[in-house]
Image 1 (cartoon, rainbow, N blue to C red):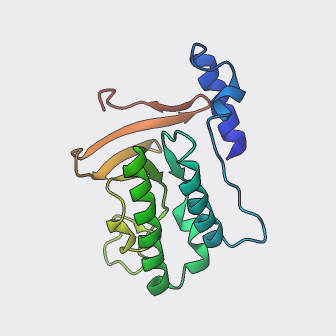
Image 2 (tube, rainbow, N blue to C red):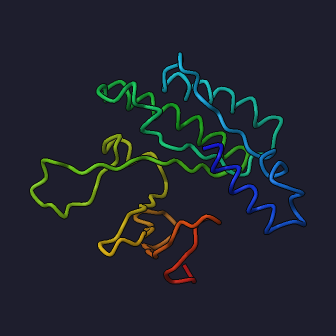
Amino acid sequence: PISRASQLAGVAAEEHPAVFSGAESVLGHLMISARAASQSHWDHFITSIHNLTRLVESHVITVLVIDSIAAACSDLRDDAPTRTPLLTSAFATLKSLACSYGFPIVVTNHVVSDLNAMDPDQPPKPALGLSWASIPNTHILLSKTSSGSRAIEVTSSPSVPYRRTEYEVMQRGVVCTGDARW
């Protein structure tokens, strides 16, 4: 994640020289938390939330990105009865911080196919199971289409109707190739 963040920081500095003096200026606004090899994924996640609680008091946070919540919970993968209340509690803390300090939270979760499904066209489900589905406010699905292009869909939101468009991931970042009004 650090090399991609550095690459995108260079692009941001290049495209917005009045805002950023260079890639280092952009990276100075990021906090990337890397897990120690001796630490479990879940312990790292909880420690990061605890550290975030202290950070919001001294730093302005504009967006919090948790990349792959399924990875953070991989230690608890086969223990749904334990995982669900722990996740619910952790995200209650995060939502409280987000509401109190006014920043959005973006969480990525992998999706999986239900191999036991009778219908092969059945949509994928969250890697953390259906109990996870009620935690986020807005669900966005990134997928590849049958033609090989990529699509983004708002599948569930309290404030945005269903929307879908295609996009490309390029060296300079994500570029919308579908409906530009999206």
